[in-house]
Image 1: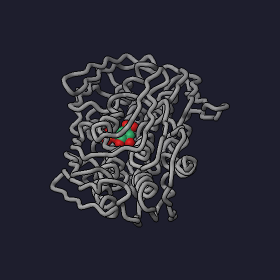
Image 2 (image 1 turned 90 degrees about the horizontal axis):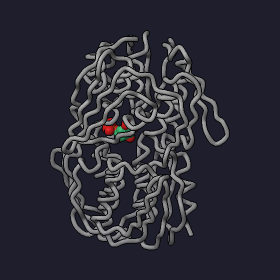
Image 3 (image 1 turned 180 degrees about the vertical axis):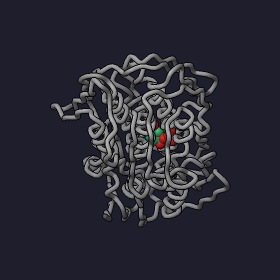
Image 4 (image 1 turned 45 degrees about the vertical axis):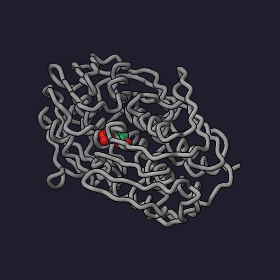
Length: 426
Ligand code: S3P
């Protein structure tokens, strides 16, 4: 589906972005593993999270809406295998986290995904899970979906250093570790989002979390998560679109509230502050609130260690396109392995806005145009990538408009994105 995004003369108001996608997946999985009823408030309504909800249902949990929250009842005897295919849709988090969970569920499990997900590498989870005693088979050297996983109710604990910064890989190992004899130890050289280990701890799991120099070591012993009430904060990766929108648009004041404020999630705010963005930050028990106002942005250098999941890089590429000077993005290879090749996608987007760009190896640069007023009107096909759609829409609203193909993929993470965007037009 194609959509024309028009320029806004003025933007103001508050946006309630969806519940954090990472927290939503984990709340569903941990609740399904527990014995009895958990409730989840603030669950993301995106398709990715719905895939996780559907699958834990297929494995024996009961998932039902209950007022403004969702009730999940985990079976006392634990989750069980089903001969049905488990469809993860577009969601890498679903496929990787479930691989870890299913490694510890006896039986054979079949995981499938859409075309985008079937191109993404699953060897990064297959390798450690095989060391733990599960069998994970997929297509080709990179073990792409469809996956067949043969799980065991007793796994071996491992001591494992995750080779690329990846919260999904860390989480898959920790979920498998719940069913392993002995102590499972996961080291990461760069700290990735701590959602899994924090939520495991909240669910009463026997776990230690130690911060090392710039990394983290998590140790976990055989446990079953307890049923409880979860409150999912707003998703910082979705808030990022509106924060950049507020800073880049010449007449804007946009408020986003109550997002997860783990430092691994909010690196994009430090980047924008360095670029001169007028951001007002407020912290409360409910999370981090941000007011973003029209700003003159200047170029900066961004290394992937500042934004470990690289999820916010496409929207920061739009900010760089409207900034004064050349922004450099270094060690961005992981961008190629997301829902689409976001390394190419971010450069293509900046190019269509009228910027000079260049790349070498895993690094790239964007020569900013000094203001969104200088953006070109553009057309782009976002393929199967929700974040490219939303980044393009922000660029179009701030600049000279855009025609975006493939807009339906926003449903995977943010079904109301265009309604929320249009709600800010004053
Ligand atoms: C996620 C981890 C990140 C991120 C994704 C969600 C998670 O991927 O890109 O959107 O919920 O664990 P990595 O595994 O590359 O960190």
